[in-house]
Length: 158
Image: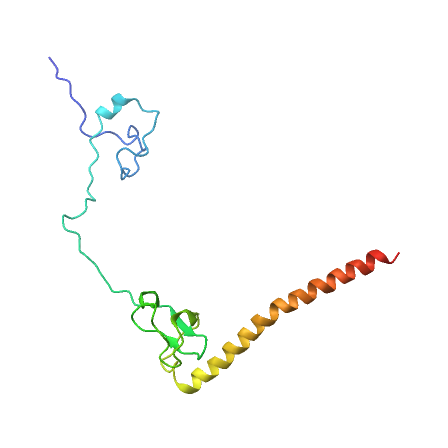
């Protein structure tokens, strides 16, 4: 009597993924066109990408990449301790301004960023920027009044 032999290797055209690579997750991407009985012939999925028992620990100290500038004197804080971690009683070492007078500073910081000449030039630039910021609401108000006057002038002259 002939013994029933189960094939150990399934031809590529019978494989559920059409001969392509095995899906990384055995439960993912199963086709509904194959009956559950075909899966009895398939070998169980092997997970060869198992994580090692002890994964290496990688830890690095993150230095503060964000610089902060004092609005009063132009001093740039760019130390290793992040600005947010400084106590609330922190003050500017140059002018003594409190921590709330600092704001984020985007441009690249050079080594001589806190030298006297560079800091004075930066302070003048800050004053100009804040002057534009103070004039802007006034200019918007004048523009709205001018548009309202023009609207009433055009509608009353017929």
